[in-house]
Amino acid sequence: MSVFAKATAKRSARAAWTGLAIAGVSTLLLSACASGGTPSTETEEPGEDTAGDALPIEAGERALDLKIGTILPQSGTLAFLGPPEEAGVALGAQEVNDADSGMSLEVVYRDSGDTTTDIATVSVTDLLSQDVSAIVGAASSGVSFTVIDQITSAGVVQFSPANTSPDFTEYEDAGLYFRTAPSDLLQGEVLGTQIADDGNSTLGLLVLNDPYGTGLAAATKESFEAAGGEVVAEELFNTGDSNFDAQLSAISAANPDAVAVITFDEAKVVVPALVGSGYPGDQLYFVDGNLSDYSADFAPGLIAGSKGTLPGPKLEDDFRDRLLGIDPDLADFSYGPESYDATVLIALAAYAANSTDGADIAKYLRQVSGGSGDGEKVTTFADGAALLAEGKQIDFDGASGPITLDEHGDPTEATIGVYEYGDDNKYTRIN
Image (cartoon, rainbow, N blue to C red; front, side, top):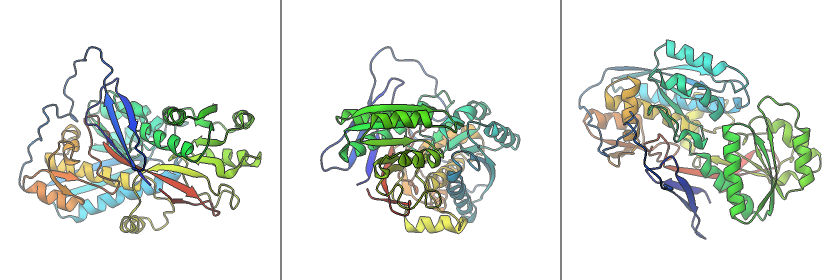
């Protein structure tokens, strides 16, 4: 059973997320409530619609040349996510350009690297010098935090397909930051609940010490302990570390029923070492940062029976084929749908605004996603652009789901899938 979560439309800086699980029902309702105190005074930001009314759409033909950039991982510890994400962007751009809507979309692809390098800053500097209106990326929350101020202070939209740190929700981004990936408050709740539901009473955590890793670990721990479990080991490591002996020894000494491996590419090192030390390979739990095809990396059957979580609905065969049409060598499709949706939403927002200015695009992004509560459902750029040209409101539902951005730029609806590894060390969706 997949877990479908819908967040409320309004959250405060002190919002507390509460998951309600009902036996036999595959829905988590995430609700938020303020903890009290004096409300702060906030100015309206480009991404907000404080009046709750949809902005007007100008009818008529468009003649727009839109240029966007990407900072997606071509190198570093998340490099396996780069190909599907760039394919998603390329597919979206192709469909925008094929729509004959009066809009042309150019994409400039650049590397994000990881937090051990300054590649993202160099890439962003280059993209801003080329006058892009929006930047898709980064995949890593830690990398995005290094460039978000640089991007948004330039009046450019930043739209990540994969950032999951909860810290972005209330970040001071001038209303220019958006994402199609849900907060790790949701993935952590699903992961912790899954581990407990599998009959595990104790849990070890191996955690990347960055905003992604610590945020996801905290949410997983809270969910697992709420289900009656106990976290008996929580070991941190830093990006760039190559020796994990101390962390793995501490986890082995605690002898937990299960171990959640909250890492990026480091899983290729720590997982064989952990299993090689005698820990059962079927008692491991992976996350979106390392849920990958390990058939070429691990001995056959090394992690057979282990599980993992990944945001996103079950990938439709048609969309998979469309991505393969862009990149026939794709072996992983993680965050491809979210990257496609980010690209199409940027284009639709520019079309709705009849402008390629970043602030103007931001004003309409929530609206074209259905966040204003009005608009005709569309699933393609072509259909959306046709309605916008008639002056009508739209609500884009994408390959990653309904999306429906809130005033913070977060998706209010998301699905988390549960996957299991087979003897070939490849994963398939089970819930």
